[in-house]
Image: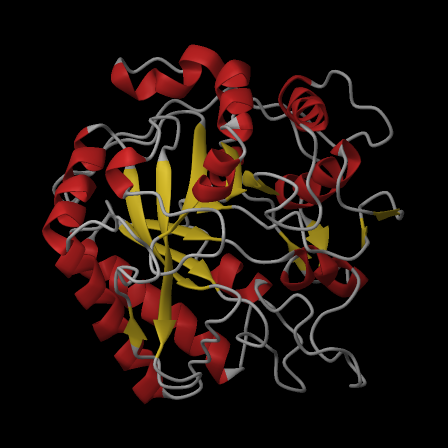
Length: 373
């Protein structure tokens, strides 16, 4: 069971950090910026991203083919995104955001970007191509947003602590190589869907006898192997079916209880596929944020601000918990993730304004070292 923890102080920037790297604030807001495409929410220049967003994920880097490992990223074409900035303007905006204490990451994958590193050649291509994107734009690190069929476990791969599936093993190795190359200042985040994480409480891979969906829980070995390198995990608490919580009940998206149950699993730990010999250990509260749609247009499972506030109150203060009682309270919970900055701007900034009003000056604690939240 989880225990109450004091709010984490902001991390100090390590000596090996990339130029422009800064400490994360005690609480931060993560947002995806539609950088390479338009989808009806309007194009937003990086320089125009509101100050509330502490981590900005550039969406998306995508592979040349599902199994090539060769990731490409470019700014949205002018014809698709009128007003798109030039590459030089974009690079200058990256530096300006970093100077203001923000992190700017390349997000790999997304709904249309299937990435399957099934060979060592794909693994090495991933390292080279992602490193080239980071270097070209002077970014702080990498967000792994593998969805769809990017990760699936081979038959017989039943131990999340010792994975054997090449696509999983190669992804872990690739990220470790990038981390070693860029040093302690490398920012690593992940945005899996619930199917690949919390569903692992009930089902893992194709199961001991086969026949299950091999994607069930398939992110767990990646998260576990990289937990010491992981800056932040923000599971997508949306576009999800009902998921069983640690209370043995199914929870549906769109309300406080879903976020409580899903986050409790990450901060308390859980037996994978119900096997008490295979317990996924809890993450640190500072490594966890809650992933949400910024508006009802952004995805299924939109949660009204009052319900988000209720979930935060319960998780960080153990008040107002309602129907689900988590196994602890965690004042150091890092914050929230939203899909997306663009959809929030389209919705008059409701999401970020609610976050700012909740955490107040704590959000800006990197400025003077305080973590009074």
